[in-house]
Image 1 (tube, helix red, strand yellow):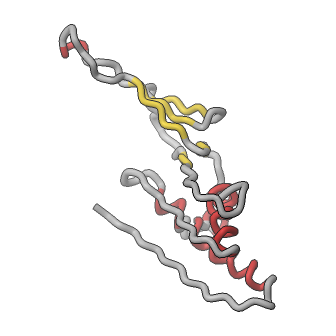
Image 2: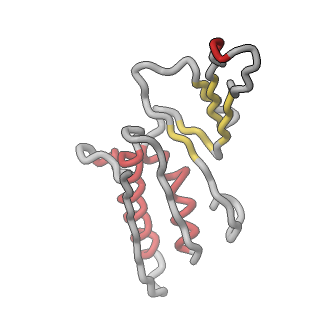
Image 3: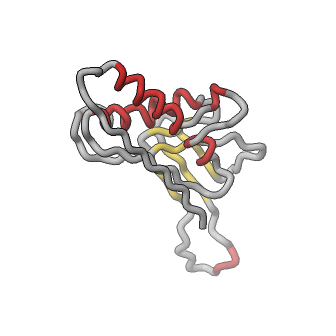
Amino acid sequence: MSGKKGTNHIEVYGRVRPSKRPSPQMQINYADHAVSIYIPRDQNAGLINNNRENWNFPFSRVLDETTTQDTVFELVAQPVVDGVLEGYNGTIFAYGQTGSGKTFTITGGAERYVDRGIIPRSISYIFSKLSERSELVYEVRISYLEIYN
């Protein structure tokens, strides 16, 4: 929920994890917030080959490998939490292949406080905001579900 209060829409963020061997077939356009994939046609498929070569995936924003956990929280989660504090439902959904960094983004790293993820930062943020509004009574319920295939 960014911008107008009460608008229904979905924000989609891509977070790029550092890679030892970046793929030449993937291009990240941070200015246009998009990821493009190019897979050349198989020349052995014959003269008529209608296989697609290019895919473009637009995002609300693409976060590069230098993006800190704090910045991820401020850009992705804080607007959702602010909406929740105003009475709207909010969901943050992390999706990706195994090893892509979902758990690190959501829960954080255990070794350093600065590596806290979206959940611990959101909980701290919620309770700090609630302490500023002592004239109101709040009931806080949080759900966390992790599904493995």
